[in-house]
Image (cartoon, rainbow, N blue to C red; front, side, top):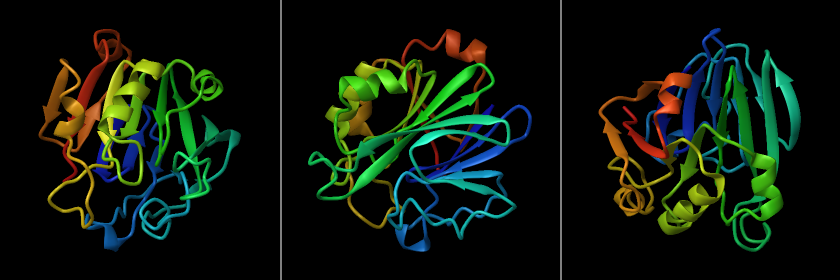
Length: 213
């Protein structure tokens, strides 16, 4: 499969069979170029403007925006209930974590996770090959908390998201605040990476930082 980073918490995942999934599309106020890619599935972790702009992507896509087990265009998707804050949603509301089963790989997108998941949530997430995790703090878990979440989930590949860049129009923590906790870090001067079972096998908890343009 291919994973393309579009900025903030938005990715385009393309399966080997050509099914295209977009996560958490954002509007023009965020600062990045609004994703207009043609896709088949759009997931939104919550209803805030920077994660729920379904007017951006194009094509005849189906929207997944809730907790549950779904089978959409041959892709098994699980939505797990979490919160956008440390106060059980009373400050910023709920957040849905999504698990995509793509061939023999399991991909997890944490959305705007705002707390350390409890043991039941970690169990529900299960074994993960690729983890997309917010690291910038302020509105989500920060870099140190993200490291703790990585240790709990124990994925093979970690792709950080939701951090400060030159184009982002509001303040978040930097990517370096997160990567300093890891020895195996690769910064790629590209938006897109191809991942398969062979790359996963040799990864061993590897952080991959993608460009967003």
